[in-house]
Amino acid sequence: EVSARKVPGYTETGRTADIKLNKNAEATPNITITYKHYEYRVTVTGDPGVTAINGDNFAYSKGKNGSVNFKLKPGYKLASVTDQAGTDEPKAVTANADANGVYSYSIRNIQANHHVDIKTEQIPYTLTVKYEFSDKSTHNGFDTIVKNYYFYGQDYKAEQKAAPAGYH
Image (cartoon, rainbow, N blue to C red; front, side, top):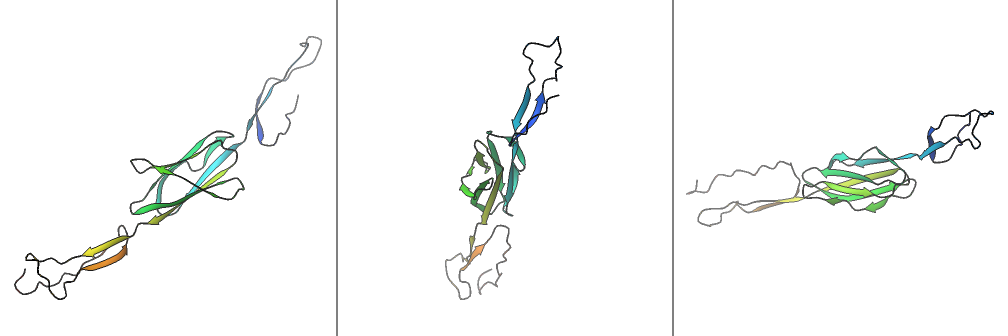
């Protein structure tokens, strides 16, 4: 029996049958031991604005390409995507969105484990409450109200004021 050599970055995946050397053996007997590169993992984290991540904890053989796809929750925009390959420092990368709002980031020629981190920001909205009168008149206490930095899903209740005399 021939034992496989330990080769850094590889694992044995198969071998031909062992042979017996005797007077009936072939003149040049061969045993073939097959190795493959270790698989590398792509892990993904996203903050609370990220939903529907595809590609987290996927394994890829050395040199293969991989991808991460994700969507954002309503009211969020993409702030950044970083990719940390092996022990390198995380690098800013680009994820592009398609017409359905699915973002994709591709990793080419994978040579190490990758960690992809997705950051989002809530989209601030400006809420304006206007009191309009059919005759275009203005009245004290019915000024336009502007509220900045409201966010998707946040409740706001406009004060219902009693109409001035002569209006209903």
